[in-house]
Length: 380
Ligand code: MRU
Image (tube, rainbow, N blue to C red; front, side, top):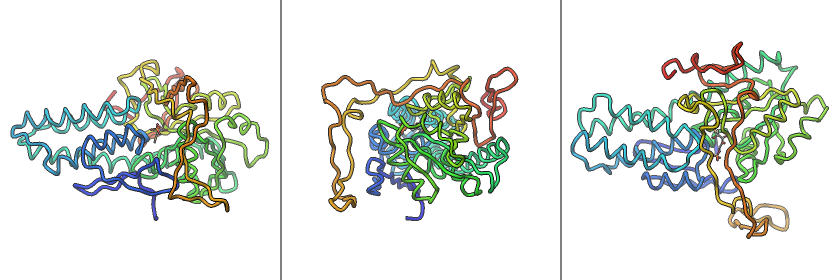
């Protein structure tokens, strides 16, 4: 396999990699309808803020391409599409990329709609543009983030950096390259990366199942730790292991810079502050929510208790090899215990040093606040 792709798309056909089966199996599901996309997103067969938006938009594009909309007037066509988009909006509540994509699609089909066919063509073209733009956004984020770190630490091939990341923000969470993992990839390709550490990211293990897999796949020097080892990692005194930056993604950046991301991100930001390590959020502008003033306004998804009380994985044979044909689910706790399982937390802006977008790196101004005017003049 040459590249890792969360989605494979050609007009009229969408294949989505089932991330629940990774890293042991590479199975793509055909997604032809909004209902199938909804299930895929809700069940986390696809996850990651940009990838969720891409799958929702493209699934509806496929459905429309195959004639699902029978409306004969402009108004009915718009109403049909609005209804399907509103349905998809309910799939997961925290990542704002989906909501921004929906707003973009709704706006696009309202620009001089001349006929139902014209509206459907516009929808499909806009959904395809969302896919295309995400890839170029990610490569730009990688470059801006690597530039910023190079400047902060005077990085060179003889003065490299080690970083820690959380959750999965790579090719699997996006259309390719990734956001936080995109910066790590770019640092590596510029020979500026000494070592990447990734957390396991309990309870869903996006770090161990997906990021570790991507890092190994790319041949990036890397080490997996459990979430609870981060503080000890910051204390390591060996020069080569010294973490220079924590780089994470975002599901939603509020207007003041407060950032919702995978549960555990906030704890890493507190640790980074304590140890004087830079804390960087990598997020396309599609993850910025100017309508939400602060993190207090972000809805945090809570997921089912079984994600904490059970775990599934492939069977290990006697000789240590992995039998990818068989997965088992095992209990890891008394099944009667009450569980709190928030999927995300909010890192306050005060703990974030920089927010890297495809349009540049945003740092706090003299008033100590983030200001996204420069990167989002049209939405400000
Ligand atoms: O629950 P998930 O796996 O969808 O959560 C993903 C994250 O929190 C990522 O860090 C975020 O979406 C950024 S992906 C580029």
